[in-house]
Length: 178
Image (cartoon, rainbow, N blue to C red; front, side):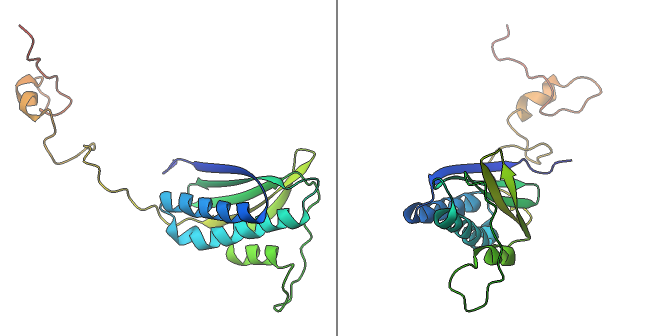
């Protein structure tokens, strides 16, 4: 049984420095909207590293798509670009100033990977475990099994069918019946 629906968000962009910061803010805002605040910092760091790799290494252009998807208890962040070359993972030394992007992604994520995309690109992705969802604020809408009488309380008792308890499912009498 699926306890919550899938949530998905995608952004297409040119991986240029000003756009990388914008997408980081978009991802952060989307996660806050989904009430996944504990994942914001790790997701923002991971997406920044993946977009920086596109900016530095992707050929023939810097066009890419960032996708975030929440499915059950797993958030997946992916960046798809048009360069079919798969990234080279190096052992980055602690004092290195470059070449540590995928090591950082590995450090902050549950798992990560790369796969070819169509014939002309690749997708680099990582996952984060999602915390238990926070229930939404009550909106005043009646829920099944609510303890309040609801809008049909006055007409339900007189219109109840024999053998059935009065309640919202009982037919209401119309004030216009004559």
